[in-house]
Every structure is written in C-alpha cells, then in structure tokens.
Amino acid sequence: MEPKLAKLAWQLNLRNAPNHRLSPVMVMSDDKRLPDPAPALQKLPLGSSLVFRHYHAPDRDKQALALRRLCHKLGHLFFVAADMTLALRLKADGLHMPGYTRKTGKTLLECAKKHHLLVSAAIHDMAQLRHMIAMQNRIDAAIISPVFATQSHPGAPHLSAKDFGRMAQLAARNQIGVYAMGGIDFAHLQRLDQKPICGIAGIGFAT
Image (cartoon, rainbow, N blue to C red; front, top):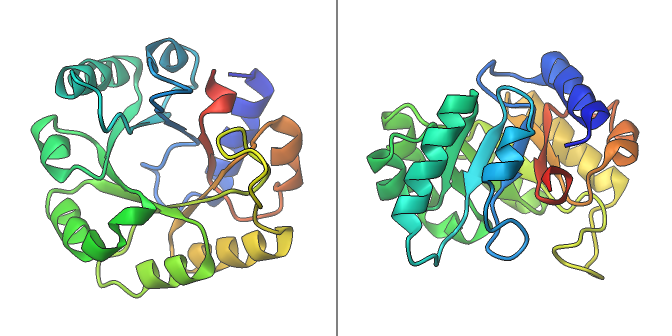
C-alpha cells in the first residue's frame, strides 16, 4: 500500500473516527481481484481491517481461520461478511453487512451487538443509510460507495461529490464512522480531506 495514502488515512481516522476501534483502512477480499489477501495484509498499516468476502471458496472456513490468525498476528482486525455463524465460530472482530442483507439486517445487528462485534455496512444511497440509522442497534461503520469510478464496476456511475458529502455528514452526525470506497488513491483521498470520513475501504489500493 502506498505510504502517503496510508498516512492520510490515519490522519483522517484520528480526526474523525467516532470509535477508537475503527480502522483507518478496510480491505475487502475478492474472489477475482484479491483471492489471496495474505500478501496485502503484510503491507497494511497497523490496525487495519480485512473484510472476508470469499462466499463460495471450497475451503472457505479453513481460509477464513488462517486469515483471522494472520490479521491478529499483524495487529489487524478481521471481519466476516454476511455470515454470523462463521464470524462467531472464528471469534471475528466484526461483521460486515453487504447491501443484499437489508431484509435480515435487524437480526444480524442484534446478534452482532449481543456478541460485541463491530458492524460495518455497505451503503450505496441515502435510502440505505437512513434505513440503517433508523434501527435500534446502530452500525459502527458505513462503507459508502462508489465514490469514484472503480475497476470492480467499469463504466458504472458513481456518487456525485454532493451526494457523498450529504451521506457522510448524516452518518457522522449519528456517530457512524464513514469510509470512502471506490477508486480510492492518494489524489482522490486528498479531494475528500474536508469530508468527515474516518478511513478508506476497497481492493485496488491494497494490491
């Protein structure tokens, strides 16, 4: 990971994180773009997070356990996406809620909070964010995307600066950590310096 990008993410985290447990950097594993996150973990700043999203890997549980152990060895946090059972079995630090978990979000949040897990959620529009804010149990982090054009979805539209700013402000006012995801590099993050974000999330900057 580019050192100056990591440094700026840390500065934003120190300035804006509503919870000291929230990382400056969250890396999302990906079956195609980041099938083996282990090398990337070695290059991340201390206190980063890995979100394990290998939903269909044949050796998923074994891979998740190895990555959780590596994360803790390196001083990082380990999140499991969508699968509460796996998160609890591995004693993960957090649970990530993809957009498709909206219908089961309330149950997932209640269970995660009961077991003192951090909870992040993928947020793509204002309606999703307001839905999460309205819940009795609040998410800890909103991963808002796509902020810029992204390799994961080439040609797809991304949020306007105005819309991202409005969403970031609303989340921050409700003590939810804001992460920018999608096309993040140092130049793009500099453009977000005045937004209340506490970190970055993604894949490309970690590879």
